[in-house]
Length: 219
Length: 419
Image (tube, rainbow over all chains, first blue to last red; front, side, top):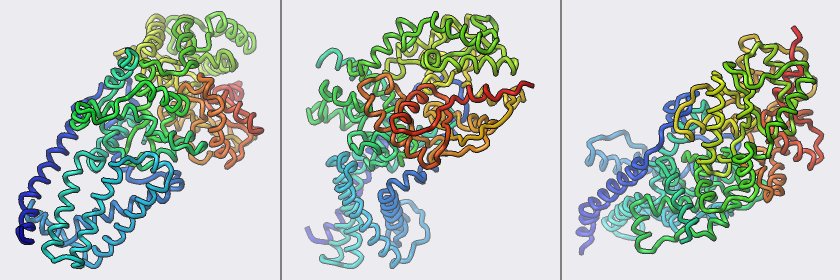
């Protein structure tokens, strides 16, 4: 298989397979959760479960004072790599072209130099997060194989994207092929791992806020 | 698999619902919940990380209710939950958790870990892995009617004492009263002044109330140990007595988990809504204040702070009322850091105080409360849970701290205006 053929395969059939696994797997996981249902609450409410649930979806994006003080590194590094990953994924001009091709929607890109810097910062934050996971006694204790696997498939698209952008090591078609393949790996792993939290946290936060909101507490 | 283990696993399966599945699906093992838990912060022991206390329940969820988990289980690729494992987890689920709910407030993905601990205890108890102390308390609650073994004659004696002290009659079994007061055994045995305090306030405010001789115990060991059938039976006794006396409201006393049991879990345990309302004593007192029926005189000159009992504040929603009430009688009130819904547990709730095995641990984690108190240096600590109160008194004494612990209701009664 030539470099060009590889690139065509990665951008074509492989991407289709990854998309199907990502979407079907994700929908299945959400369905599995919702299908379990929950019993109606017969206690007289003091507040609104709906309002509480929606409020917590928003408010839980921000740490409370005590958590920020006690877990400063975790909170700050966590913010950086999440926001950085989001910016690199959605605001790099070539990515927006892909979204435009696929879904017919586009939005303004951020300057390439800025994306480049964000990518570097995000990779540094991810490495720091990994070192923290290995060194922090609670995180090390809680961690399983999956946590390291998920870390790897998260940083790979950033590393390969950075290499592709700066044309380091391989020919441009190969660099792009490797970059796209790393994204496909992330997509395939996604539904079967904790990466699902990107979707299920909306459910989790809603339930948490609803349970508290029903009792008149902002959680 | 032993029959008891099977019962435990079945109970886990029955307890798992959509919120539990959403919570386990969302955990990224960031460990932030550890820093919110006094059993971790005061011991530094990673096994006491809140989410880790749920590991057996998580695996049952994964093996029974996820697509790949079921396949992995069928091919023998996943680790089944064993009796030995549950035995190891017993001290994590019961001794090292008061179900205070603080972890549920900080989890960035929104997991209500406490909601799951409550559920996990159902499986622990069903598989025979509950602490002796809690089993004893629960047996006494079912057979005698009180976890501390308090019988009606003991209550009657305390009522007579109170009547003599305050010179008022305390109504018992009065049909058609507006309010039926429940009490905790701890109040009856250790803080009987509470009964007289309520009587004085209600007399002045013109509240129509009664105590039932058939159901006066507010606490519910069934909830703490995690046996819903028993919890439901204990709630049903109260429902029956309230219906028999045709009262409009039932008052939950100064006890944290009693409020959770009767106010929030009760209707779900007995399977239908009540014919009466449940109010916490502080809610009622604050209503009386608003209506101008509760008037006080004089102010406490000493520096006061308020300890929010977890099940009343964070898990129960009664947060503003105690502050409104304290404002009536305090000249120098100061909030501890993290007060209100982020308050730190005293360390003895959720059945921990009934579990002698956890005695040393609960006193060790009291250091968190000590640090909170050291930050504001009060003369007296007001609270509204007799279980917190007895543990706070013990912790303060143990640490040589000269701080008085006060009941909010009793303190208000002492300041009651004589018109």
